Each structure stands twice: as structure tokens, then as C-alpha cells.
Length: 254
Image (cartoon, rainbow, N blue to C red):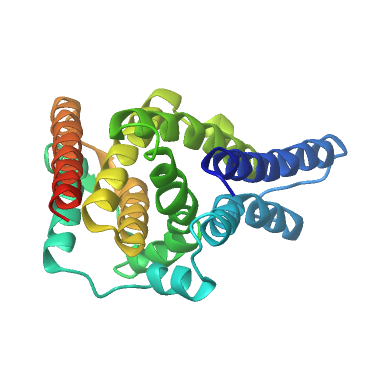
């Protein structure tokens, strides 16, 4: 399988699957059937739609990258990483949610809520990394630079998310501008982390923690938020450029 076909198959499979579920959900709702988290049929629809990126990411990883299923599972749960990788995750998270420390708060009804949200976020969030960061963006970067491939991923991942929100029934509640800014920030963070660490697990845990903090963080200083996001973008670009230069140097040396 060549690169262009791999990209096309991933997008056709991922978006085609979730759009098919959207059409089915649309028909069911117009027939008066409730499709959301409160019904069995809703949970099935959410599950099938939500797994699309991971499913087709796995297909491309096996067929194009020649990974085994064992390697993919091992990479997904590869908790043992360099301390510097986890430190970088922490830095990005502090920058991403540091604005909450200024006139904001974390809403916790019970101490164990973040733990529950974290494991839920791995299933309904972290698993997406198998498709978007583990497979799609690295394949895109074989033909585009980091910024271009990140922006392409942002647009397509955004389309995927809005489709998913429709299936969930939460689309009317989405604050579009805020969500898109957050998604763009996450794209730069996660792409830079994967380039730096080459770790699927690091992306999974970061994505999951971002989802958790997004649900419990309230208010905060917006000026600090925008300033920190600028720092994140600059950091992510610098990290990726340095890693790319390092790889090119290693290739020349060998």
C-alpha cells in the first residue's frame, strides 16, 4: 500500500464510518427514538462512531506501517517512559490549564471523580490517538512539514469531533470558538509530544488528562489563557523543528 492510498483509506474509513452512524442517528431521531447516553441504542451508536479513528488507524498501522497487533497494543499501554517525557507532558498541561489558577477553580464533587473521568477519557478520547497521532499525522509528515500536517489534522479531527458530538446529542451545547481553539492547541501539543517521544502512550495519557481537566476546570483569567496558548504553540513548533533537525543529522551521520 502506498502513502496516498493509506491516507485516503484512513480518512474514508474514519469519516465514512462516523458519518454513516450520523445518518442512522438522524433517521432514528426523526422517527422519535431517543439516541444519546441514556439509551442502549445511543451507547451503541456512540461506541461505533467513537471507535472509528482507532479502528482505521489500526488498519493502516498494520497494512501500511507493517505493525503487528501486538505492537500496537504494547505501544498503547507502554507506561514505562523516560521521566523527561512525563515532565514535558506536565509542562504542557500546566500551560494549558494554568489560567485556572487566576480567578478560576477545579470543581470536584468527590475526590475519586477525576480518576473515574480519567479512565473514561482513555476509552472516549485517548483511544483516538491510535488514529490521529500514531498513524495519520506521521504519514502526513512524510510529505508535509509539522505545521502543515498539524493544521490538516486539526481540520479533519475537528470535522470528526463535530460528527461525534451530533451522535452524542451534545452538539447544541458546544461553544464552537472555544472548542476549536482548544482543539488546535491540543493538536500542537499532541503532535509535538509524539515527535519528541515517539510514544503512543504519552499521547493517550495527555489526551485523557486534557479531557479530565476540561471537565473540571471552571472560569479563570482569559488573558492568561491566550498568553499560555501562544507559549504552547511556540514550544511545540520549536520542539518539532529541533527533533526534525536531529533526525536529519542522524541520517547524514549514518
